[in-house]
Amino acid sequence: MWTTLLFAGAALLAAVTSPAASNPTFQETGDCEATHEHLYKYAAKEDYFGDEYAQTFEITIYFKVYCLSVGTYGDKRAKVYELNTTKAEVGGTILDREETEEQQAQNDYNVLLQGWFHFVQTEDGSIPIIRHSREEDGEVINTKKAIVSAFQANFMGTEQKEEADPQSLHRSHYTYEASAQDVENGVLRMHRTVNSEDIEAYTSHIPGAEVELKKKEDITYKKGVLLGASGTTTVKLFGKV
Image (cartoon, helix red, strand yellow):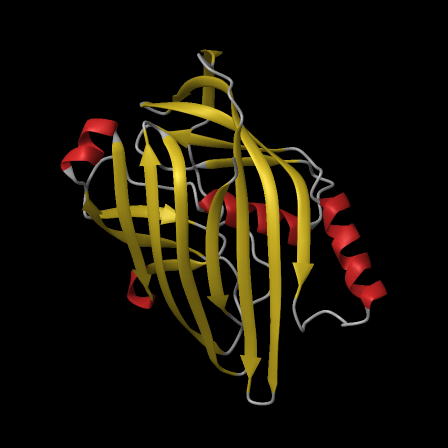
């Protein structure tokens, strides 16, 4: 059964990369207790617009995630996960609507997405390390980073947490809800918001442009496994771009 992750965006940004930071390294201490594959479907729609410009880009990616190893990251317990994509479907007005062009774009994505991709998740829900092939296409890397950012969570239960995603390094605000049945079943439901004033650094600098960002996401975990995530991100640029 495929678990669906749904995201929508309104943006006018080029592909970006995660901000560089001086962090500890992952120290492997053993193998994962269970190596079950978890199946997911990531669906995103992006709207790009300007004074005389409006385009959409839609992508659905089917992928599998499983644990590779356990260890530590600094003073936190952590696990390394591998993300394997199985299929991509692309569409939207940003592509030429001729069938051959759209099919070629879809074929290109399916080929490019096959590269290996690992990420480290710590016991507090952070994802401090992402690893991928040096030969991987930059746009595909950012697509996979966007997928991985859906797995970010806050298992500490605090109201704020420093995080990073393909758009920025920022402070996230969390609220939680849990019914008695959720608590009994080990289910944690989180709501995450990020606004412009929470941004510490954007991962893509556009000279002369003022950036406004709003992000809202809902994340549900059960006993350390992502059950679902959905959200919207709006990015606006003002001035010379």
